[in-house]
Length: 324
Image (cartoon, rainbow, N blue to C red; front, side, top):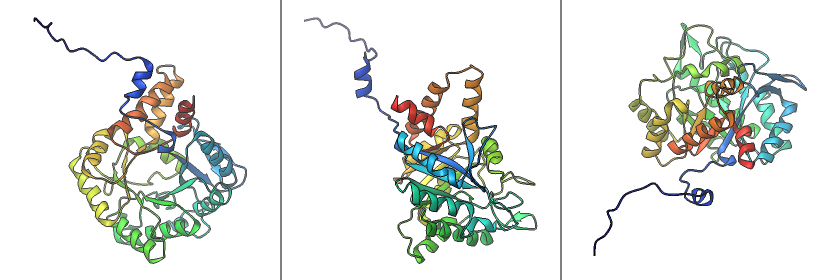
């Protein structure tokens, strides 16, 4: 018997079959929506460089949280804009600070929402750096105490998870110890384990009013040229007690997300940052791209690289698309 020559070919797929064998899936509950909280009442201010994103006052949070829940987005990441700033960022750990007020409001009005809080000083310092300064340089050890006090104040207010973004050495261990000592053992830490000194943060710094007044953050954030360093940084955070490892930014660092996914069995988060969001929005407004399709493809690529959680300003838009 003569058999015909075997010729490999692409798998033929109809829509149902394509859905059945899809390797990577994106769900609304995997998305975290960042929210900027500002002082005052009945306030909502558009952020020009981030179309569709507003700064809101605490009393507007219920509306925001309810909308997210209706779309299937169940987690918020809170950033605060205080009324006053100082050299030590004391507003970050004030018992009635802006984020602390926001946590209590959400837990009172929409307790189903998971509240994650950014733990850093940059939004609260008058110089815009992520820690305390000595001779115009960030002092790591002095900053650790203030970061742990901030995390504890968030936990006391009712936060479900804290997310230190400062990149100080030893901050995960310090925060874990303080939380445990105060009976908050069940509050997990989502560490900004791999945070690059990136140009993609520009719109965020406008939104949070936290651009450094001098210098930059390269002395404590990572060099974009380095990948092996990412594994070292993440390993240190794992050893110190991190529960979730985050990579920031996301799209320009998909290789780093994959490296962490292959190396660690902890959940991996990725922050689809303001600049990455703004580029999609700007090109879509110009009519140069299909904004919805690019958004979906971008977020799917982050999932495919290995992220379990995606923090993104697209969360509500993507959830609407998924519902549709």
